[in-house]
Each structure stands twice: as C-alpha cells, then as structure tokens.
Image (cartoon, rainbow, N blue to C red; front, side, top):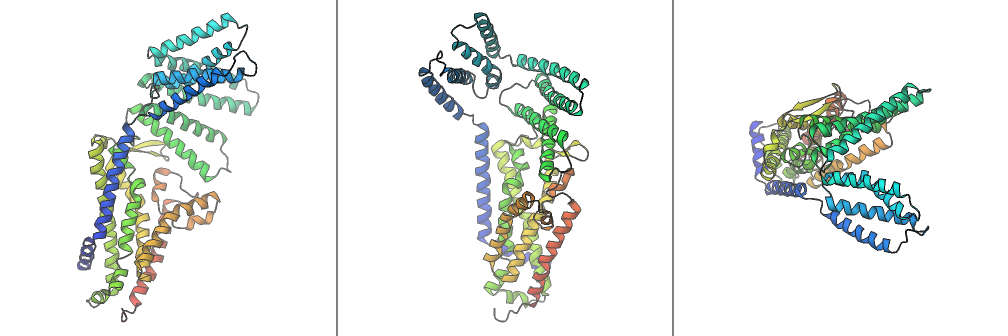
Length: 489
C-alpha cells in the first residue's frame, strides 16, 4: 500500500499542470495582498472631487434663486445650508473628526441661518443668538476640541435616561412601559459609546476604533430591537441576524476595552484569518483536478493494465489512489496557507501575527481567545468536509465514467451551485433541504454555539449526513472499479 501511494504521489508531482495551478495561486495571493495593502493605505480622495462638484453646482443654482421669493424659499434654504456644509466638510477633510460633527451638529444651525435669509422682518435677537451658537461650535472645531461634543452628548444622554425612567415609572400600560424600557436601553448603548470615547480617547475621525464604536452601537441596537420584539414565529434568518449582531457587538467591545485590533483585516493576520473565504476556490480547483484524473487517466492512457497485473487487489489499488488524494489535500491546504503567511508577512509585516484571534461563544456568552495557529486549525477542521466530499465526488465520477472532463466539470458545478441550493432552501423555508450535504458540510457554523443554517440541525447531525453521502459515493466507486473489464482498454 505504501509503495503504491508513493508511486501515485510521484506521478502527481511530475505533472506540469499541478505546478502551473500552484504558481497561478501564488501569483493571485501576491497580487491580492499588494492590492489590499494599497487600499488600506489610500485615502478617500474621490470624495473631495465630489464635494467640489457639489459646491460649484450649489453656487450656480443659488445665483438663480431669490431668497425673498416665496417660490424659491424652500429650495434656497436647502441649497444654501448644503453649500455651507460642503464647504466646511472640505475645509476639515473627509477623514477628520470634524467631518461627522459638521454633518450632525453644524448643519441644523446652517439651515436656521439660511432660513433667516428668507425673512424680510427677521428677529435680530434670535438671529444673533443662533449665529453666536454657530460661531461657538466652529471655534470648538478649530480648537480640535472633540471631547466637548462627546461630553455634551453624554450629558444629554444621561438627562434623557432619567426622563425615560420617570416615564416608565408612570406608565399606565405595558406597551408604554416597554417603549420606555426600549428607549432606556438605546440610550444606555449611546452612553456607553460616549464614555468609551472619553476614557479611551477615541475621537470622531475615521479610524479603526471609531469604526468599532459605530459597529458596537449599530449591532447593539439591532440586538435590542430583536430581543424586544422576538416571538415564536421568528424565522431562522432573523435569528441568524440576531446572532451576527450579538457577535459583532461583543467583538467590538472586546477590542475597544482591551485596545486590541483583532478585527483589523488590513494586515498579515487579517489576511490569514480570512484564508478560507479568500482562497477556498483554489483549494477546490487543485484537489478536484487531482481526484478527477487520478483514475480516469489510467484508463485513457491504458496504463491501468500495468497497474492491475501487479500483485495487489483492485480494492487496494483504488484505496491507495484515494489516500493519495487525501494526502494531496493536506499538502495543498498547508502549501497555500504557507504562501499567504509568507506573502502577507512580506507585504504587511509579521508583527500583526502576534495578535490573538477571538470568537464569541454563544453558550458561555463570552469572548474566547486563542492563538492564530489554534484558530486556523479549528477553521481547517470545520472546512475539511467540504474539500473531502468534493474530492470524493470527483474521484467517484472519474472512476465511474473514465472521463476526467466530466468528473472535474460536474464537481465544480456542484460546488458553485451549493450556495444557490442553500439560499433557495432558506428563502422558501424548505426544511427537507437540510438532509442535503451542502447545508451540512461546513462544520464551522456549529462551532461556539452559533445558530446553524437550518434550525434543528446540530454538529452530530451534520457529521452523520456527511458520512452518509461519503459512503454513498464510495460504495459504487469500489464496485464498478472491481468489476470493470479492462480487456478492450
């Protein structure tokens, strides 16, 4: 058996096609890493061009409008306030913390000031008061005092929380109490983000941690919405969205509180963590090519006769070929993973690889920390059934039909159509689809207590389904190979 396996491996490593595909994979990995590096370093320069175009457009339109004409007033206010807003955005820059403040806090004052322009007899006292408040805000922007805006929002959040608590205490119906409770939870999330900003010195500028603040807020709001309105009629998709939001919120919280960057994908670690989602197609193509030709080529070239005259049983010969495919699968995964490790380290630097990986454990309701090596091992184990089953399908078709093209093509079509099968089953709520192999071959959906694609399935269920399909494909393969007549080959 060992000698047969060595011979099969030698045949594979002599093929030019194998090295060509691996070189193409390496070229893709290099190109992809370089592109991601450039994207992560580039600034959003296109938005400046858009702002300039908007400013020119608004200025031209305003020249055609009379603020004192009743027909033009509404449009004048919109254009005038938008023009001044765009000018401030351009002044401070799209990546500055002032950019967001201008949109959310300065724009309302600009609308008020534009409204005063449309009044023949405007209230001078009110106008000056609004202008002074506007100038005071601009002064804070110019002084880089973003903390004052955060403190103002925190004070307002605390005030609204107390008001909602009073409303809850005086509520006469359960609906009123529930609405007040929901608002309190909303405000508590906002309060938490503002406290993080001040404690962790996270300004409103475009940055990794500012993005986490937004991620935590939006995900937490989604979690609250679901928990306050969930019912027995909720679909699996709704529950999956809830689980995703819960995971995103807790991962964002972990990074913010610990000052880590476990979700940063613009480095060597991030590229490695997303290894299977980025390079799975290459793993599938290479192993399907090998498994889809390892038997049929012997018949097409007539070398199967030389193989069968050896003192080995046909089952032993076929088993050696299948084991060779399994060995090659391991070699392919490790090789492509090493390519990404080396290329990612060269392009981005190896420092980020020291950062631990994290997963949210839905059973323990806590973040689980692990090394990158442990994380990759867990992901590999979870994804392995996909590649083994596709490999087995190509191997079976190659043996049954003696046609490499058919074996490779049908297997790749099955792989590409698997996501469509899963989507149709979920969208149409076809419960029987869970007995197909495609919704069950990705075991990672069952790890850490996550909700699977189909409700009612489990890790044990998925493993049984995978085993059944594996056996179904192999049994006829061995039967046909054992009984096949080779006299006319």
